[in-house]
Length: 383
Image 1 (cartoon, helix red, strand yellow):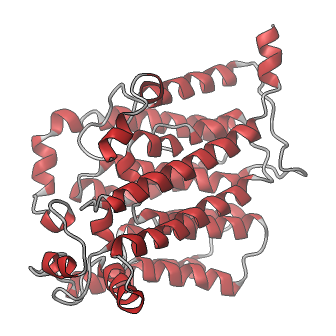
Image 2: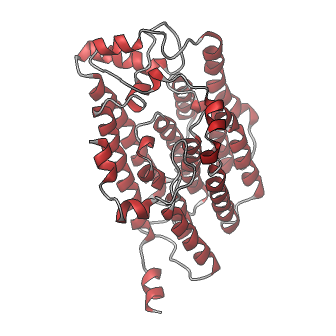
Image 3: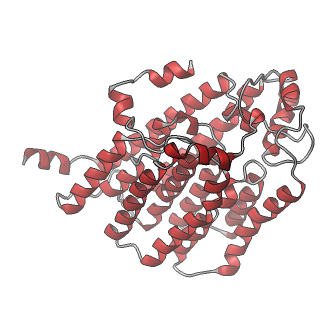
């Protein structure tokens, strides 16, 4: 009885703030370590450029940082981290603004604690520093302006322009564009097809240009160009020459476990939708958003990453439907009922397993394992 009384007084809003701040700090630390170590996958992705062979997918970022280096003479590693720092901090600040005046409950916190939610960043350091934080930031801005009733035509065009530019940084913006449409629908509760067209145009026009005119990520001179600029890679995206569909086929004994992780996440989201009494229309729209991203699962090996991005979009989006509060500390107290018990079980399961970015889809090395059994393992790997 005393435990029930204690738990009912636990400030869930404070826990949400703690999770947000801890995730932000953790992400920044490992993003810095990735760059300091010249990680060929994280840092390398930001340094794909047009100088080697001309126009190509993801090449805008590298050429941008080359220009900055020419102007400032700063090392590329630190220029990239400065940009990542700005994007990541901005995202978490906007997300904080989204949730601070929302009446959060244990069920919403369970999404944050999902193995492919905020906890996913703790479980898989390879998520840190990726370009998806740009699209997270754009989506968070849209949701913030929607929830605060500040979305003007000018601001909406800023989001659209941001999506257009982001496509030249990473093509994943194309596969997650439906969430921007769902967010608009959640606020307006009506379909506005003409309004949505500009969002699709913002990602499909660059996609067509990339498919028609884009060259290979490494046209043969990237490594030499980067070496001249002070960055040496011995592995990473510039060395990538793998038939990804064949890779998935050969490693399917590991990949099939992603279906278990996906099943847990689907149950989690459906349980959230039903408990919060969110309309079936929205549920079908979320399903459509997932189906829209299926080509990623066919063409690329990062299945865990795609699942993580989906969950992050849902975490950012669902506050549109949560009741506002008068203070930043107000929350919905824990109610001891069937919903609480199921939510607690979901959280417990989420903390005992993890989903790797690629390869292993389900292993019992979740947050509990990393905190209580090998607390320094990740740092040892990075240093």
